[in-house]
Length: 85
Image (tube, rainbow, N blue to C red):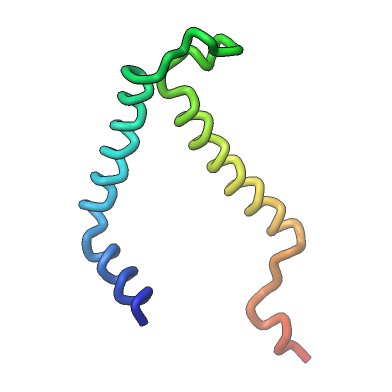
């Protein structure tokens, strides 16, 4: 029941949650730009500030879309699949 109340709370404060998450991402990118020493980077993209944040985000998006595509190939079944006679 606690998780349901948490989900309801987050849904009712969705705008604040989005602003908080965007601010946290912005702080991480700025922190990467200001605080991380990039002299020992192995490749050129690693020297760009925010590279790993962008890489992680794009990787998550790719995983989501590939999972949905893979699921629609045949893993997902209709809701009435087991009730069908």
